[in-house]
Length: 107
Picture (cartoon, helix red, strand yellow):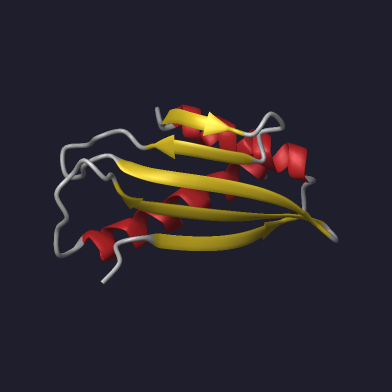
């Protein structure tokens, strides 16, 4: 069973505005940027370790859409960390929380 969790949502803002909101939320959450496209529409990142969770590896992809942009988020267990039975459930909760924070930042 895969521990990867994904979600996609639509934003009425253009891709540049949405990508900027993604970057702001990641910075606010103290995520480490591992790499990104020059225009910021694809960002690979690592979440911060918490009391209850190891770091997670993530990717945020912002694509232009007809009336705004779409954001695809994924989170998975860091490859250097031991897997756990509840990783899939915890990762799904974390990716949904991140999506909510980004949507709130877009306004």
